[in-house]
Image (cartoon, rainbow, N blue to C red; front, side, top):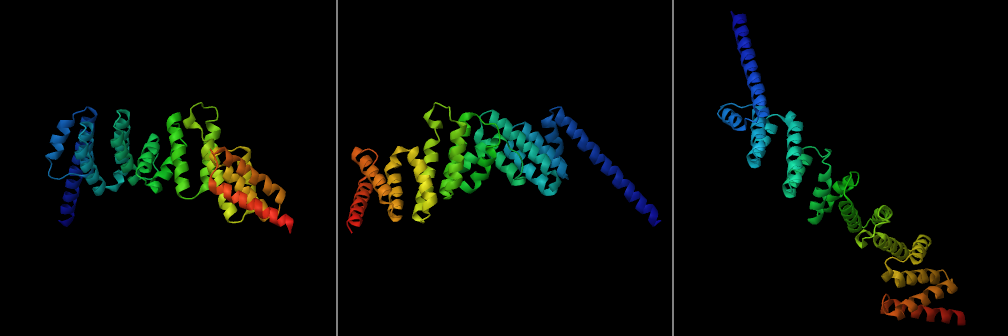
Length: 301
């Protein structure tokens, strides 16, 4: 008797299970046939819904561009069955791509964010640039950096590639990682070497980073490396506004090393640029002049 009851219960479960499976397949077919309102009417009228049903409702509302409602059903579907994550990511990706192509970039950014929240390794392609720029513009450099670095590996139009380089350089500068900033500036300078637009001239950024690194090494009394970088900068001074400072630090290094001849050469260059009244400053002029006086005192002792 008990076996008969168990068999009956199992049979009913199988029948109902098949019924639910058939209904789910039927809904998928309706979605393919674009019967979105019919799908919504059918599923919202059901007292008990599976995770798959919520996903189907979300898909119907997505196709009708009622994205707020679709989002709420995607969330429920994922809560009821986390295994649906990849299907939901795929839907989010379609929304992001569609909205980006239509010019709704802010909404595309929203869905790229949702995708990465579900899978931070997912390839959002052009989304790496736009989402990275979104975070950069909002001063969230921590979130922006990995996205922009990923953006470097995809095919970007020149204008967007230039922006990406500039943002990455600024981020590493803010992190006081001048060596890395200089490497990106050097790469950018090489990649856009033949460009005519001044906006694409990364030689200035590269030169600035080289000078900043040289100055840091000088202040830390790492004279060999500092001097190499300063002399490289002096040979190719870009930006020219830093040329008097570069000569001053080079002169100071030679002064500390008791190489008076070379120190005098660089101090005189500081005075020369200061006299032009364009690139020099009174501070560098005064320091160079004072050092020349000290060298003169040394030679008289």
